[in-house]
Length: 90
Image (cartoon, rainbow, N blue to C red):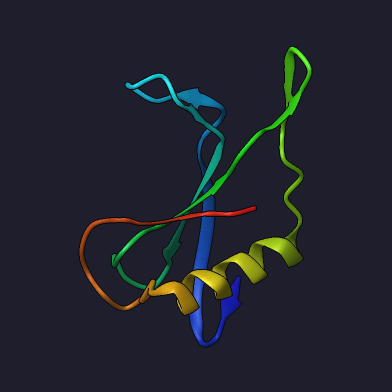
């Protein structure tokens, strides 16, 4: 995938998990540049509560592209270095 001149790839970072303090963490995707190692973007998609079960979020290529653009607007710089940038998506 190429977005705004950046060659990017995404991979599944984790399925539904529970954090150390007991909070529910949804599906997480890792987005990184393919041409060199730089700052990772983590997109987190909360699971939808459905009574006593949770439903996995539906991620399509258009939503993924829009969420990456939103992360750039929120401060993720694909060329920078540093700790991963996390964006919780609605």
